[in-house]
Image 1 (cartoon, rainbow, N blue to C red):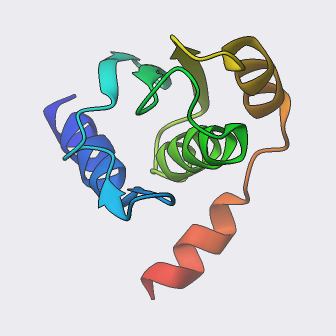
Image 2: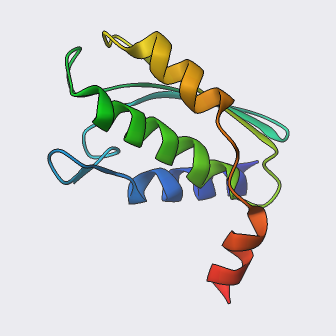
Length: 109
């Protein structure tokens, strides 16, 4: 479990807010990460309630996709809060097609 948590936070550190070019971890945008065996739930907020929606979608999608690619993770749910488009972001990201796990394995070699 600690190993998985460490891998998740390593992935989150790689995600950069596209508007300002700073890691979402440095910006403290991650509110909570719950790990239940192979499922991960991430609560996050954006830099402001009116942050451009396109950047909100990008950040949320990157969080979901990067965590999903970690070996042993089978389900990732994102919950963006305190944003005027939060409901639409959550719906689109959580219902989007998951990235291929094989792709990630190839990148490691």
